[in-house]
Length: 116
Length: 113
Picture 1 (cartoon, each protein chain N blue to C red):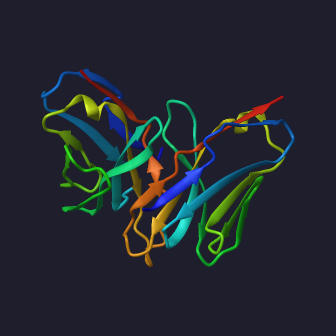
Picture 2 (spheres, chains in turn purple, green):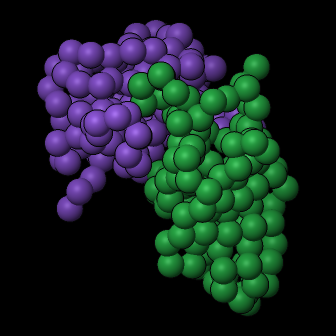
Picture 3 (cartoon, rainbow over the protein chains, first blue to last red):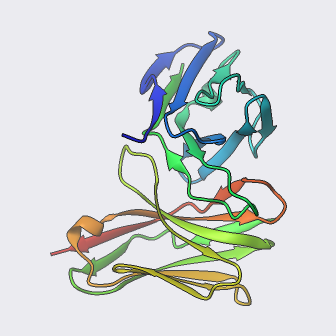
C-alpha cells in the first residue's frame, strides 16, 4: 500500500531534549516536505526537499533541521525543542513532474508533539 | 502580504444539497490550486488540482472553478452526503517557487441527514 509513515504518532517531552520525528515513503517520490498545523494558523511549511541531499526552507524553519540522505526518508529534527513547537506535524511526499505543475501531495497521518 | 482566505465559519447543509466552498487569495500569481480534504486526526487527502489556464475541473460529484481575475476558486460538492463532512483546504503553489505549497486554514463542512 502506498503510504507516508510518520513516527512517533504522539510524543510528550520536555524543553531542550533533542527529538527526531521520522518520515518514510514507499512511493519512490522525489519531493518530500514537513508542515506544522496549528489552530487558527492552518498548515505551514517547515522544510522541503526536492531530492536526495537537496533541502530548502519553507515558511517557518526556525528551530528545525532536516536531512535527506535517502530518497525514502526525511526526518525532522528538533535540536532544542521549546513549548512554541507544540503542534501537529505532517510529512508529505509527491513525485517530481516536468514543468513544475505540482502533482498532489500524499500526507502522513501526523505526529502530535507536546513540549512541556 | 500573501493571503489565502477560506470561510472560517463552518458550513452546514442538508444532505442532497450542493455545498459550495470559497477560496480567495491576494498577492499571489499561482501556477495551480489544489483542494484537499482533512478528517479529524488524519492528514489531508488530495481531491482536485486546477491549473492557472483552466477554468473548471470535475471529478465525480466534485467541481472546482478557478478565476484568476477574481483571484478566487470555488469548490462544489453536489448531492452532498453525511460522509462528505470534513474540513476542506485549498492550497496554492506560487510560480517559480518549486513545490512550495501554501494552504488556507480550511472550511469545515457538516452535512446533516
